[in-house]
Amino acid sequence: MKQEEEPPNNQNSYSENNNLENIIPNSLSHKNGNSRKWRAWHEREVPIKIQGKNTGSGVRIKITSNQMKRDLEIKYPNSIWKDYPKENKVKLVDNITYIFTAHLPFLLKGNVRLEYNTSYPHSYSWASQCFMRFLPAYWYLCKGRRGTTVFPILKTMINSRARFSETKDVPPVFPETVDENIIIPFTFGKDSFLTYNLAKEIGLNPTLVYFNEPTEEYARRHKLNLIKKFSREQKEKVYYLENPLGSLREFGEGWFGWELALTSWALLSLPFAYHRKAGYIVFSNEASCNDFFYDKDNMKVVPDYEQSDQATEELSILTQALSEGEVYTTTFLQGLYELAILAVLKHRYEKNLRYLMSCWAETEAAKDKRWCADCSKCARIFVFLTSLGIDPQKEAGYKDNMFLEKYERLFNVFGKPAAGTGFDSFGINRDEQILTFYLTYLRGNRQPLIKKFAESPAFEEAESRFNELVDKYFSLHDEFVTPPQWKKKIDRIFEETLKEIRKEIKALRK
Image 1 (cartoon, rainbow, N blue to C red):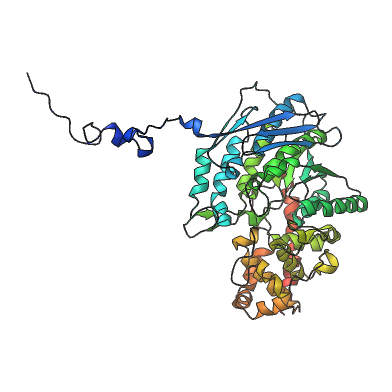
Image 2: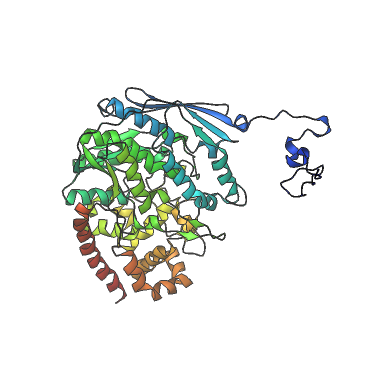
């Protein structure tokens, strides 16, 4: 009889030196008799119970856990929610409940298991896409507070999960919509005003909806006044919707939850779209939302992925899925940079500047003024306005001169990115800012920060790149998002206006 051979001593074999104790991690072994009861991986998770409910006037979200307890409800005005079909409400509650709570694992401790009483939402994969695309931006904004790399946040994403209930799948019911009827989530910023005016000029029928976020404690006061003034003077109705659900987002300078803000507004806009038979939800996403850079680890950082052209197209798929393919999501401004948007507003729709508010309004500095002068956005818009020959204090409601030296930290042309967590803190719009500082100088402004800029290397850079920068920031760029039925009209308006603006700007050097 042939003698049995010993098994080879490799990693796939078992021997005295490769026993069970050596295979499993020390933390799980029973050495020295100190046994520890092992739990299944799902039992190590922290359960967060989340209930979404149709209240008859809107959506209620109730959260129950050791770490968090919330009971919040959003109520629609008039009969907007009442007239929305029951079938549609079921799906919308599923998606609204998830989209306002999907980020909670980032804010809570441990491996979180979100347990929903609602069914699997259409927005689940879309939210995961947004979180993944935002990872490098999260780290860039949170550096020094959450570890040394993006890994801790990625770990939270992978280790946490959501569990949904089984419910009957009910397809939505939507009337045939009218393309010319559009919903504009309206913020009273420059982009919203340009979108609104464009829509009116090319013969569309916009419905304006302002979503008041809980973090906007001071903005609420100012915008209520602006809504009343704008509605009275322009004979235009603005729907005002309090959004308590927004209090689930991270407050202050945090971004968790805000990476899905536009998605939440798109979902909340669907009952308005049904009511108005609107074929489009029109955001105001601009060219700079596509800008990105690579960080020191060669990670691609997109500061605002949700407003990029790709994200706009993907968000449209979501609204179509919840409306029988009737409601699309789009933007008219993807071909313009921020400076061009303000320039077109000034040259074509100047009367709207008196209603303008683009401030973050997150600190007490905004308590009594709609431009807080304490955020990089206020600083950026201030110099953009002056570069176009607009006096921010006389024509746009500023109370402060932001060219004083104490505001230097809020600009990104003096050697380092702007303070805070706004778009400017990434530094990628530096070229746009050095152009605006240079144009302000050419217009004769000699305030302290303009003089300091004139003595810096950035001044010489702006001077040598003048034509290049003007052509970039005052031109219409190729894009594929604007609906084709209106693209020619919109492009013609932009091209005709910007041609005159470039001519005027370049004449400043003569």
